[in-house]
Amino acid sequence: MNAKERKQTLHDAAIALEVTRNKFREFCHQHGVRDAAWGYHPRSKKFARAWREFMRDEAMPWNRKARDLIVQTLDPVEPPTQPVQEFLAYMGAWEELLSRWEAGVSLGQHHVNINFPSFLGMHLDSLGRGEEGTTYQ
Image (tube, rainbow, N blue to C red; front, side):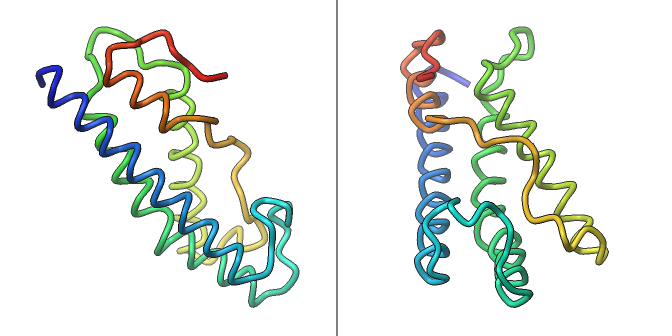
């Protein structure tokens, strides 16, 4: 992948993450919660079910798209940057939780113990510009 393709691919990943962020805000607005202020402790079974459906049908498809695009850009010799490593770990944890939900297990768990890395979208854009050391922390 040449530098121009890498830049575009990382930018596309950042856009996918922005779509997820906007969908999350919509979900919170529709359910009368302020972003993560609800602490991932649903106030009702109906809300918990809506949250699981949101993660399965809305958030994760876009997060997977971002993950797959990011993986395409990884250097096989150099390790990924810390924010990218954190995002890949976050995605792995969510994939595990979604598979348990699908099996009818862990329905009382509503979030993973790995935080989404702050400023990941900006970090991806900086990587696309060749600014490898920028972490926005």
